[in-house]
Structure formats: structure tokens, C-alpha cells
Length: 153
Length: 210
Image (cartoon, rainbow over all chains, first blue to last red; front, side):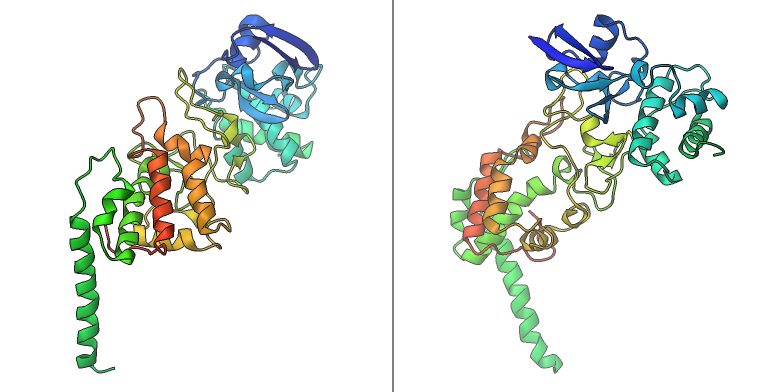
């Protein structure tokens, strides 16, 4: 089955098993390896991307549901790493090992799009599905606030 | 009201409740994984008692964790037969479909995922707060189901249709990945509700158990 979708603004036609999870297509077929495999069961958030503007876990999203969809991965969040969240992440040195950070950023970006000035509760609720084994949660929250305010958290 | 005048009333209510229990005792035994057919309830002659018994039978589905887990009495869905809080921690959100970044459809697909074992069905979401079932009796759920203010504005026939054919309701019988399904079949469940509605949709008494 052939599936056509746009990823980071570029149209791709994929001749793959329609049940293949989007994450496999991104990493193994298209070599977009910024999106990470963590658990494969939608439990950790490492594979988070946007599909038609919605925050989704790509490890459990079958390609058959994505015909004509608009997908944005960490590689497409900004052309040059200048998204306010990416700048805040760098300024506050948020990552430690870094493995979960692409997913953290994609969820945070979805949050700020819907709630440009999120409350602590909104941050906690939206980011609750993105696990960080290094425990960078407090810096993640700080960086989201910084990006939201454009200055101090 | 004098005590002496209360006695006959109390005795009458007690007798009626006993009669209900006796009537239901005539029903054939049923395995936990099955539902009695509507025909089995013909043995209960009194129509109102039959109606109550039909609802109690259907409540075995409603009160099963597979169904109740998404009718929580709060903002967090439950999981498993032990009805533990959903992990990852998700919350209801303004429209019962989660919050940004943690929307139900961000993980739950239109059908069960065999390998990832994530359950799925069309329009996966929580029942609204006013449709909470967890911690409630069959009697309370029955009254709630009949109340348009607490059932999404549905008529009795719409409730029957919903229970008999809704795709998310149907998931209860096909939960995937070794999950215990609710008893019987959706066709039987729909038939029980249809028969209940046709017999004046009586609600069980508080304390009645299926």
C-alpha cells in the first residue's frame, strides 16, 4: 500500500505496510532519527511528534491513519533551531543525556500553541506523559515558562 | 404519622423487596462471562419486577471494570480489573478527550494495537462527569441513565440504540490483549436494554444486586 503524507513540509510517498508505526517510517525509512524510540507502547513520550497539529505518540500511530497528513518532527520544529523553546532549552541547559528531549520539546510546543501562557497545572498535565530518566523536569518547566514569557520564567 | 401506621408501609416495602429477590431467584444460573437472554426473564410475571431484573442483568456489563474504567467518578480514567489510575497520568480535559499533549487520540487508535497492546476504538474518550458509574449502585446508575440531564440528552430509544450499536461501547466485548471482556455479547446487551425500555424502564431498588 502506498501512503502519501507531508513531513516537515516535504511530501513523501511511502510503499510500506500500512500498519507500520509512523516512528519506524521516520527513523528506518526516512532516516529522520531525531525522534526517539523509548518504549514502543505510548508510555514514555520519547517518540512525540505533531500530526495535523495534534501531539501524538508516533510509536503507536499506524501509517494507514496518516494518508495526506501533515507531520512535524523535531527536525521541522524550526528551520534553524530557533524556536523559542529550543532557545530556552539551550539557555537553561535543560538536557542531561538528551534522549527524551525531542519528545519533551514537541509536547511543549503543542502546549504553547494552545496555551501561550500556560499555568503550572497546565504544564504538569500536558507534560505528564513525557518521562525523563535524568530528572530534568524542573528545568523543563522553567524553560517552558521562559519560552512562554520570552524572558524570565 | 404514628408509628403504628408506619408498620404496614414498612412491611409492605420489605415484602415487595423480598418478592423481587424470590422472583429473581427463579432465573437460570449464568456464568460470569455470559448474560442471560431476554427470554429467560419471562419467568418473572410481574412486569415491573421483570423490568428491574432486566436492568440488573444489564448492569453486570455497566459495572464491569472494562466499562466503568472510563466512567470514573473524577477526572482520571482507570485501568485494569483492579481499576487503578491510568498510567501515563492523564486527565479529563475540557471536553472529556484529554488535554493538549495528552489527548486520548494521541495514543489510542481506532482499533486495538496488537503489538503495542494499546487498546483502541473510534472516538476513544471519557464519559462526561455526570455519567460517572464508579462507586455507584445499579439503582443510582439506572436513575442517572434515564435522566436526560445526565445522559447526554438521550431518549430511552436512543439509549437502547447507543448500547446496542455504539462502536466505543462495542470495545467492551473486544478489548484485545488478554483483557477480560464484559459478559455476553453486545447484541444481548442491547436486547436487555430494549426489553427493559419496553417494560416501563423500572429501576432496581437501592441495594439490589445483579
